Image (cartoon, rainbow, N blue to C red; front, top):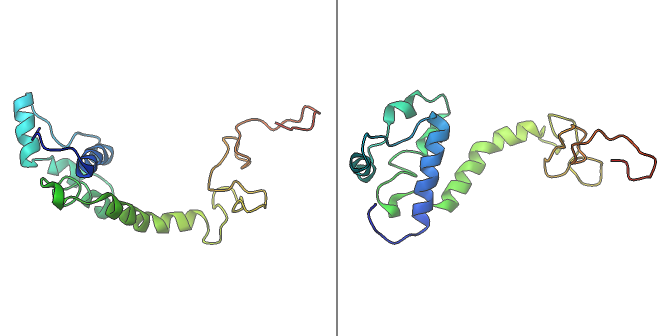
Length: 146
């Protein structure tokens, strides 16, 4: 809209718009014409009420504000490295809880993928046995057991 050079902050802003939609199930900027929409975007006039009403952690919602990913000035936006660090910190307790803190998956009891028959890397097969496939694991007698 502003006609500036494209750079990484534009990606952060776009990702902020997508995250806003995921958190609120609504668009951050809405108007009844393209002209009015452009004015709202240029002014950073996002739907604060929708964001406030979203039932998600305040830390996550804070990412999609004018102080972070939706900052009007590109230099003021959260950077991608900052976003990665923030998300790792936010998700660490959740991931540790799922993995039981000891390398095992809290959902299936599978191992850490270090030669123990586990699913490795946290990837489950759809059949729940941790072998990465989604088959029924019936042997056909030829030794490849799929």
